[in-house]
Image 1 (cartoon, rainbow over the protein chains, first blue to last red):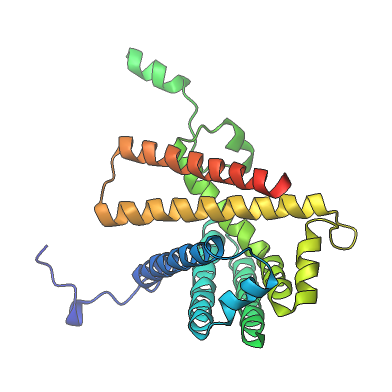
Image 2 (spheres, each protein chain N blue to C red; image 1 turned 180 degrees about the vertical axis):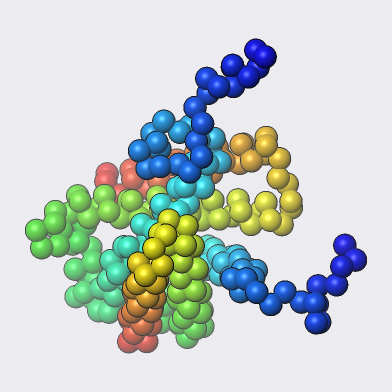
Length: 121
Length: 142
């Protein structure tokens, strides 16, 4: 592969390459997996689980910050995943656009609510 | 041309139509793939329910009572056992999505893409998510 594919010969068309989203999907997935393991460890080891301990887990400032990062990661992950589903199965472009906008509203609304819950604590 | 007549007997699928899905035999990796989508879409649709649970479980001791009673007394006209079933569906979706995702990451990182490994890892994904879901179902219902 000696053909030049950068500079003046770089690819300037296409559905914004896709690599960025592909990578974001994997990075956010890895982050959420690590968060899941961390939460499971905190829930399993310690005193009997009730409101006190459950709330204490999320009250720690570092846990709040980390949970916030994971909520944003989830937002991005869900958007990319649902957009892929609409792109694959919905042909009429108008319907696709409406569904994509609805998806964004749904996900951003949910993320906002989750952040509100977190910072009320 | 014996080969040709034999090939013609097999059903041919081009763009698979919804009505053909039942007759279309997927390999295990195909099941993992479509269930990855189904589980993702399910979690997307039930996201407000999950955040509602997050809300009531964390906000106060009184709302925590509401969280636990959701799965005993139910909410509104929805009985508790139905809420447990919904929670179980979410548990399966999460486990399948996570394990299928780890399978993806592992294949991306190691480039260990062969027919045999794909088949085995697909079975491992389907089985481990089913077994873990079953174990949590026992914990949830008994």
